Length: 116
Image (tube, rainbow, N blue to C red; front, side, top):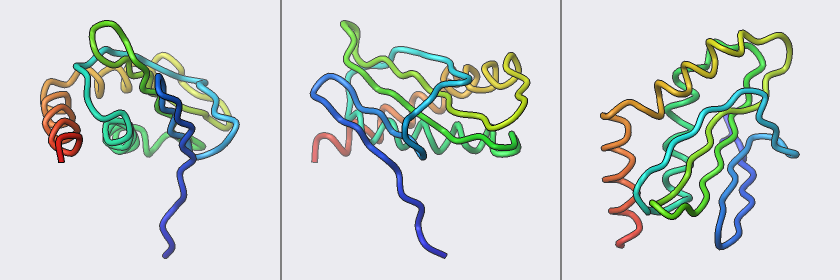
């Protein structure tokens, strides 16, 4: 099995990670985290979001990480092909972003990788 490719659009202020281009947010949720590696954070958020929403038919993850005065702003969500229970999907994404264990792991891992 070949490894799937991810599209990464990167500027000094923002990183966008998506399976398909053009990236589209049919469902989304956001949060602000301390400053850390945008690329590593985006991949970790995408993995945890995918685990939470993998049963959502036609879901294609998208994560945006942008500079924010308090650190980095994360917008997680994605494109959904077909009908979607929008409220439930956005609540699931918000739960992933708000989970204290996820946030601690993302922060520790992205900061450690940025320091090396």
